[in-house]
Structures are given as structure tokens and as C-alpha cells.
Image 1 (spheres, rainbow, N blue to C red):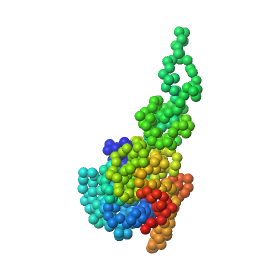
Image 2 (image 1 turned 90 degrees about the vertical axis):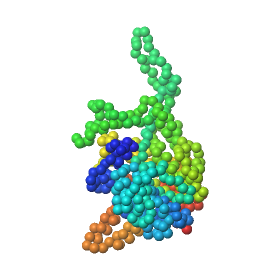
Image 3 (image 1 turned 45 degrees about the horizontal axis):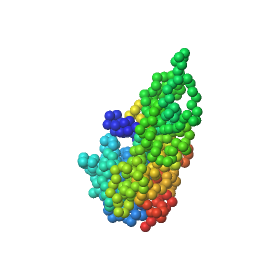
Length: 452
């Protein structure tokens, strides 16, 4: 997935440069919530303001951060909203964008900085913002380059970022017990053929085997015919490893939810160590180090312990609220779902986010944070006042085409909160990571109010 999406040699995000066309919007491959309606980014900005107020209205050291900022549309809406709250706006020290694509970085710079020059630094690139004059914006290729700070307040948004991080897929397979597997074949002097022995439950056990990407096998008369003449035959396919791999022996041990005793033969799980590592890094930025357990995830690069935990993070992505994803790897091209193994580098790849794993990683990384959610995007947007904002926007519209514009605003909002089986309001989940309050506070949008 990493090679196909962010490689400097043909990556979907890093090398695709068609004049007047990118991966986003109607002319691209997919549309994200910030591109659908400005209300989405405005409510993220309001949530940041609410957290800033609830955590003591810090006078300085506030850092806004977005992971995977796309065109920069979401951050632009956040900044426009935050700029209306003068005391908070003046507390912002730096805006950080974690972006691996030079092409998208340039698009973000054009939107957020206009003619302000971009300069290269030791850790990335930087410029100055249009909406917050005097505030520096810094681009980092990886979260690991984020500077540490005991007195900082990071406010982080990761929208449709974790779903693009690489996964490993494992299938629970029944295999012959090692002692039996090593038993020599039985032959006779009259017949060299192997004696066929049926494997019983006493002879067998289950273990995780990794599903590996391999070149597609030659065509077979039993293959499913293509749905259309234009459907290309995938260049690659998933095959079950005949033996355990280092990953199959390690990654399923990261969570007790993947204990093979509780699962049936043939069960498939998807594990993303990069998602867990990224979540752990965000958690430590907010709560400082202080892992509750010494799991493989918590033994990542540690930051200096914060004397007073502060900051907050919103993770908004698609995936199940509690169960482990399986068989969710997908390809998207021109707004259509396609095989993820077709046209590598020309197709967007993603997989459902395992939110239960995200919570595990956050709490393991720092004992000074707590998680709220995940909750459906529709409910979160509505509880943040999205419906009222929709009404306010439509009330401001005037002119000959007012009815058309109003309808466009309403349709965009309805798309964000659609609770249908494939609606964004139901498929997308919202999760918050905030400083541990000992159960004394719930954030806005998760059943709580602004604590002043």
C-alpha cells in the first residue's frame, strides 16, 4: 500500500501531476467531507475552540496539526473559523501539516499561504499563513519529525488518514501439528505412493497465516468471467502463506481480541502497525509518556513526559466501531470501487480503520489520556450544531440564484449526515483523544459541554 500510494516512483499521491486535475473532487477519484461542505471543517474548528476553552484557555503554545491534508480545504475552513475567536487565534504558535506528497504540499501552500514564499528547512518546509498573519505553517513528511514540547497544546485532526496506512491481513488456518507434520511419508516395497491419512482434530491446530500479495495465477476455466469487456484482469492477488511469517507470529499478539481461541477457522483480520504507531505518537503528544503497559506498540520513540497533559485529537475515518476489519482492502478510481490489485499507482487504496485497535494504542502509549467514541459522523456533526449552521448559511443567501444555492447547501449537508447503509453519516466514525479527566468531563460532540 505504501509503495502504491506514496512512493516517489509512481505513487498515487506523490507523482500524479495532471494539469487542472488531482485526486479529489468530481473530476478526480473521490470526494471527501471537507470538499462537500464547508460546515464540516467549521465544526472541526469549533471543536478545537471548545477544547481550548475547556482546558484553560492557554495563552500560547497552541499547535494546530492535520495529518494528510489533501488540498488544504479542511485546514482552511478550520483556520477561517478559529480566526473569529481572537484570544485563541493569538495563542496559536504553529500550524503543522503532515504531508508526504510534494504535489499536494504545493496545492496546500497555494491555498493557505498564497504568495508567501515556502522555504525548505532541516525537517521539511515552512511558510506563513494568510488567515493568521505572523503564524508559521510547517510541512513535515512524517509525524516523527514533530518537535517535542512540555508546554505545548497540540490540536490534531486526522481525517481519512489512517485508512491509507498499510495493513497486514491474516487468516486463521488449520494446520497439522508440528510433530505430525515432520512425520516421514509411509511407503511400501510394492507401491511408492504416499498413504493418505485424514487429519483429525487431535492431529491439527490453528495458527495465523499471512495473506500475501502475489502475481496473479494463470487463467483457469473456473475463473469468474469479467463483469464487462473493459474490466482488466488484476495483476496481483492475495495468496495464503504456506508457512508462518514473522508478521503472522507477532502482529496478532498485539491485542487480546485476536486470540485465536475465540475465533473460527477461516477468520480474517487486518492489522495496521503503522496506525497503532501513529495513534501512539498522537497520544504522547497530548498526554506525554507514561505507558500503562509495555506492549510492542508502546515501545516506540518516547517524548518527554508533560507536566500537565494538554491538547486534543479528532480521528475521523470509516470503519466498524468495535469489531476488527477483515477483507476491507479496496481500490477507488474515478468514484468507482475497483480491484485494489489493478493498475498499481493509478488507483487509490484504503482499508477500514480498526477503531478498537486505535483506542488500545492510545491508552497503551500514555496513561494520561482518555478516548471518547467512536460515534457516527452524523450524530457528531448534529451535536456540534451543524443543522443550525446549515440554516444560518441558507438564510444569508440572496440574489437571483438563491434557491439553487440554498438547495446546494442543504444537499451537501444531507450527504454528510446520511444514515443510509452506505451513507457517510453512518460509515464514518469520530473518535476523540483528550487528557485524562478521571471521568469528570466529556468533550463537546461526545455528550459533554464546554467546561469553562
